[in-house]
Image (cartoon, rainbow, N blue to C red; front, side, top):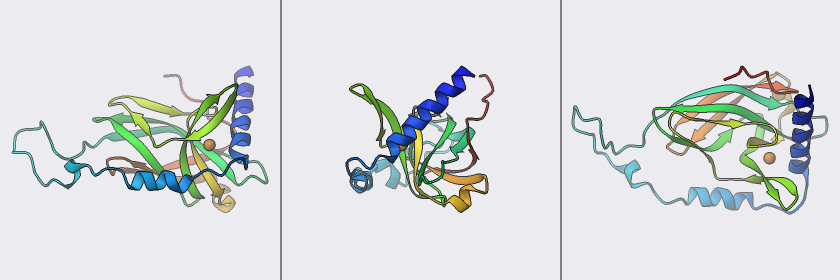
Length: 188
Ligand SMILES: [Cu+2]
């Protein structure tokens, strides 16, 4: 009980921080920086590996993703932002989550939380790295998928599809449950 209250308090803080008009953030610059990322020479190489050799493949490695506990916080009335959370596992290759899209939000960003002096603030980052065979957990008070200009009609359906975009070009369509609180995660 105490734990869930703490989580609620922290996430309320996160949402409050997200909602601050504060300083205009150059989100577009961040996107542009991404688009202008140096080309991956391997991506354009048409060079199938000789049959029978599975090593030194030129193409980016594909990972098999598993998403659990995917949920979006049901935003309080009057808010036009909210956040999505999940546990994401990559098997077979390391991966980097670099973007997310949904019809339920005009714009989504990848955010983390970090201390700035004595204050915990959210901050946009370029992506989250998932080690091969490892997982990342996005949770209230920590890493999250930020959703701006939310569509309440879609959120009201209780289920929101989000497309997760990875640096190697892979995408995953995942349904996020709209909830007031985190689902009870099974103990791992
Ligand atoms: Cu945020």
